[in-house]
Image (tube, rainbow, N blue to C red):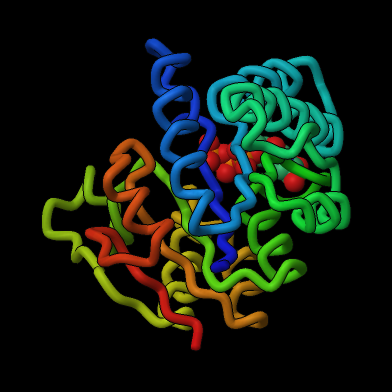
Length: 227
Ligand code: UTP
């Protein structure tokens, strides 16, 4: 069976409007596809992480403190998806990459959040993909593809359907310098490059697109080739 890691942004998993309805639809899709693809789903922190890290920062929390709260939020979000998946999911949220790799040996969907301070859940997805020998990472995000510039600010931004991992690496480092949040964590890109894992950037709200990405079919988003 093909092996895939999905990095799903917190704001995708928790749209903040009829959340249970969206999570249920996503879980049904994942359970359906899990007959053909073996998956680890790494959940981001979204609004809940931002609330805690923002409030903690105002109170003088250290970067370590804030990261730990961010991780807590990612794990809470992961619990919601795990609950929605019921028996299709491994019975607990792994806390480390090693725990995830062990859970992955059971033939169920593994759902997790962050691991340790210092990076984001995209990097966790790349670490888990490397450890478990996954072919590709699907980044289920709020943009529908990688662009040369912020498409909200620059209507002429170029939209990419195919990139090499080296090209994505250049783009995320430019974004990082500009203070924009990267389309994929720069550390995650480096790890995927090292381990030759492809990255698909897709709109996580578009469940048809998600299905195609999971099944290795043609997508509308960006395919980043590592090999
Ligand atoms: P996210 O992965 O959601 O971060 O983790 P993000 O990419 O900044 O969020 P979006 O995608 O823009 O919404 C939330 C926070 O939790 C901490 C980091 O502080 C991160 O910003 N975190 C997460 C860790 O320190 N380690 C982890 O393994 C995961």
